[in-house]
Image (cartoon, rainbow, N blue to C red; front, side, top):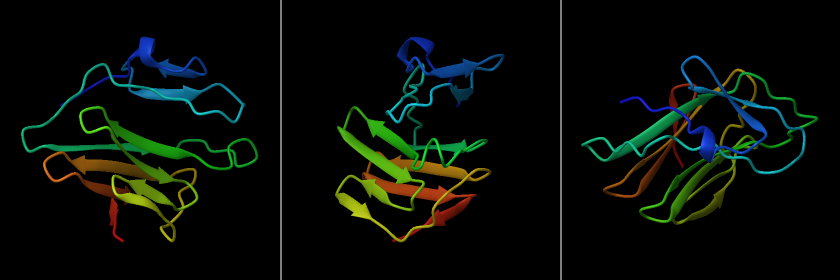
Length: 129
């Protein structure tokens, strides 16, 4: 299943890059939350929703912490993996001690919509806690 980012649902300091509309570039320098939303909600038949983001550039002096978040409107739940190594999700109000991520890493977040179990990964390796 493929999806693209929705320009009309994307923060003004984020640029969606052509030709495939799958890459997002942060143009801003302010320390504010920004979001990019998909064109559509893709729910596979098995109920597992998962995505990965490759951190191409990360300037610690400008963005000391980056949070990657998956938000489910249907369950009003969010799942977050922070570059500081903290995760949050559903009934988890924050767990530290997970590996931080940085430039060059691929970070994954997912949820099983049937069980509401959160899944986190770094560079293809599942994180457990």
